[in-house]
Amino acid sequence: MEEFREILGPLLRNSVCMSLLVGLVCPLVGVYLLLRRLVFMGVALPQISSCGIAFAFALEAWGLFPHSEGSENTLAFAGSSAFTLVAILAFSFIERRGRGLMEGAIGTIYVLAGAWSILLLVKNPFGEHGLLDRLKGQIIAIPDSDLEWTAASFAAVVLLLFVFRKEFLLVSFDREMAITLRKNVLLWDSVLFLLIGLTISMAVLSVGPLVTFGFLLIPPLIAHLFARNMRQFALAASGVGGFSALAGFYMAYKWDLPVGPVDVALLGFVYGLVFVGKKTLGALRPKARDAGSPTGVEA
Amino acid sequence: MTEESLLTLNHLAVGYGRQVVLPDVNLSLPRGSFTGLLGANGSGKSTLIKTILGIIPPLNGRVEFASVDGRPHVLGYTPQRDSLDPIFLLSSFEVVLMGTCGRVPPGHRINHAEQDWAHQCLRETGADQLSRKLFSQLSGGQKQRVLIARALATKPDFLLLDEPTSGIDAAARKAVMELLRRIHEQQHLTILMASHDLPIVRSYVQRVIWLHLGHVLQGPVSELLTPEKIEEILNLEMN
Image 1 (cartoon, rainbow over the protein chains, first blue to last red):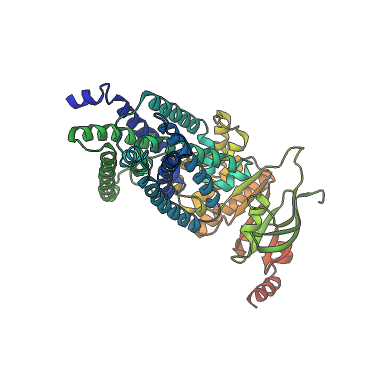
Image 2 (cartoon, rainbow over the protein chains, first blue to last red):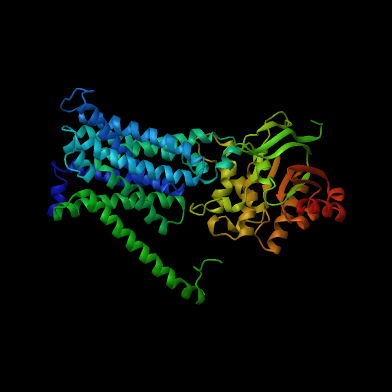
């Protein structure tokens, strides 16, 4: 309990809040990546976002932007957002041209983004330290302004996801039906991808690509194992993400470990636990059906 | 376009990208008719239906709909049920509710009247007891009933179905076709149904469009589906 009081103290409060925000919101957009079978995109986009940050810092190192204290966050946000949004628009264009091409393109871009992040970083005297921290998922010093900015952006994302859930679900579930209903499928796809891109950019800026990817995909995968409808699916994914973010922060603080990797390891543990639990229940269920249980699933 | 026609295709070329599947389709569908779209696998049935629906742009020519009481026509569409991903945790009712989305502005909730209408469509297709079940867990015949209910929920002037009886057992096939016959008779809907099931088409539809080798044959069942004519077409296909 003492540790809880310490991490909620003035020194770490912002970091806990940022971790919680990422844990709650990333799974909500991750649900759509999972539903649209774009898990690879969830892997690649945080990496591309990191590459954007490295590129922005490189511009500063090359003298294209003057170096000044406090300009790093603005540069990082600009680089992250620009790279993520361009990648997302490119992916949404490629998505309509066939699955094989999509997977190949995402895989190639993922590898290239990883390589370029390192190449841009290795010769950069300004960006190296800060970017390395971000890549490791070190959530330590979060200024008030960053937290407020992220909270406002995430609030807008959640609001839009809620208000237009009917449209996003329709174009994701049955694109052809949406066209016959005269829905502007291109517009709704673009809005959804922009929300995904904005969330990933903000999350990578705060917690790095590893943690962002972890929270984008593992909580929805866990929730899908036991959710019974779409509302439960989204809420459970967000709940699992929020819980893991808080518990992960506490464990990292208690055992003096980096927060990001602990969060992801914890999510992996929860996923394994729920998966085994579901399989065990599944194995027991036929016996219950034989015994005339009303919960037996209709063949 | 003749006065009775709801749909007219004028020198329509359909296909994907540079691949032309049907180079020159000219036909019209009378209002209130029940038409079967026959053809072997790969003959272009689904491509033609998707072009009529506006899902695939025509490579050439025009798709013309007659106006219905001075308002834009409404299309009801039943896709091949396997095209819908089972990863979505949607109940049958929620799937049918999607049919009402054309009348609900973006960002608005689907009101009680539309929800009642979705329930009515489920009842109409005999699927009301499935409303709370996950769509992905239904059998083939049950899914087809739900998808027909969804198409009806759009309040369509023209219902297009892509292989509604493929991959389901004989009893379910008969039930689906009896349902379509009843809907056609009661609501006087114009229906176009793609199928490669000759006996089903012969038993239930009034007119036939037969696609073979890029050509389009059309006429009433009594003329186009005689044993002699079928043998002639099938021999042509085999040769």
